[in-house]
Length: 128
Image (cartoon, rainbow, N blue to C red; front, side):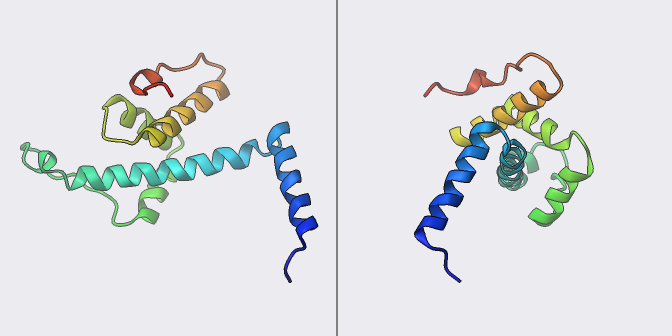
């Protein structure tokens, strides 16, 4: 059954209120984490096929066979996603600005949850 226009507007206003009040913070962070996992997976695929990783005398990187396996690996270790974000930002890997901001935001959320000062991760991000 299709929703009426009034019902769609009511639901939209409820979502906006939840975001503004902080009630939807968990959902927003979960969405950010999923987007970050996707960005990190893309980066990992790019790195694994890069000629410098093969010709440097080191064995080719062992990567997950698919995104589900990669995501499961991140989920199985409590700090894996945060460490992957930190590593991606520290090594200046080729990420677009939006993904770089996303990873930096997750590090800021992590620092806030541990009651620490903001990390210096925005150094490589050009101002908007």
